[in-house]
Image (tube, rainbow, N blue to C red; front, top):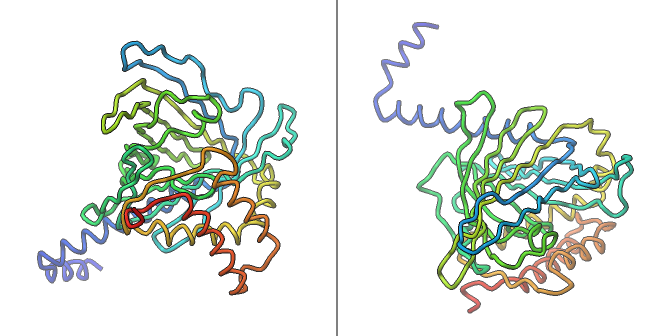
Length: 331
């Protein structure tokens, strides 16, 4: 075995050695990322809160409210993984709430956020403000994991690319990006005084649990100018529970998974890196999410393996998506 190593070293000319070293580094980052992501699947109690910390714009009065999701209930999530390719994993969150006695709240089950992770993705969509997205080429930045966070209808919330840190005992991933105002702010907190969020996210996987810390800046958009309003600190703890605690969510997934997979595949044909686009989401009901959910109900009991039914469902999804966005080609 020693002789074999010496022979390999003697035969290794410089370009080949560099290639071998790079390949090994690629494999380490790929496999470490996969392990960290798969460690996050399962049933969790989710505890997240956000609070403003430092005023950045003169005259602004800090909002002292704490966005605390578990104030009067317990939020739980079932997180499962879909292998979309050898270098791409989607973690889908399915949320539900229980009251303080542990009883599931009626109608609380929903397909929550998704995390679409891809190693060595060729591009990502970067938010430029005012509901506009541009394509960022990543070919010159290899060995990164791109995280695409999706909304309830699988539409784009934000994307960011970074490597997993392999120097710490627990793997972590940190990334900075600009994003639209979060739904919690417009929906739950009633905020309309800022338009964007400069996000800094750090994910740490502890095996039995995992944590996402955020250091964000709420930002006012005025034309091409961005004015920092206030800093925000947030954290989301995922505390592992027995899988049986999420049995209702697992049943919820089983009935809908075929449609969800088709929805992801259809979005892939739209978010294909061809060029920039602008969201034109309706301000009133029905929202794009509500239209997608109506379509889901229509096809939930049908066999999407049937080619004709699948084409019909895909055409319905595309029609809803295309009505909510404008590409440069359409202008």
